[in-house]
Length: 91
Image 1 (spheres, rainbow, N blue to C red):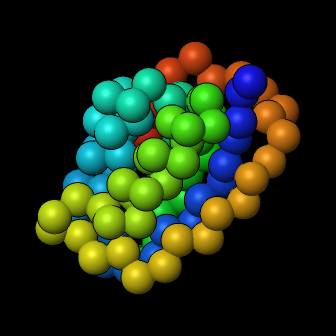
Image 2 (image 1 turned 180 degrees about the vertical axis):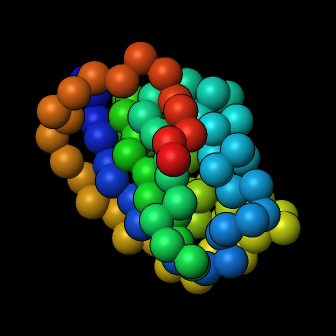
């Protein structure tokens, strides 16, 4: 069954390759959706997939890539309104 989360990630996540790293992790775990910069210190993402895979990427995002520092992740589970066929970096 398809599950979806909307994430707000705060911390040192801009200019450190966070979006590209998230896209790579999404491809490895096989989830779909998107990620984008929100403001000066946060990133926003929407992720879809099997519940266990979505939970797995949430745990990775809470740690972030080695060069970043994640201070907070807000997780909002949602009903999917559209189905994504890949994972993309949005502007």
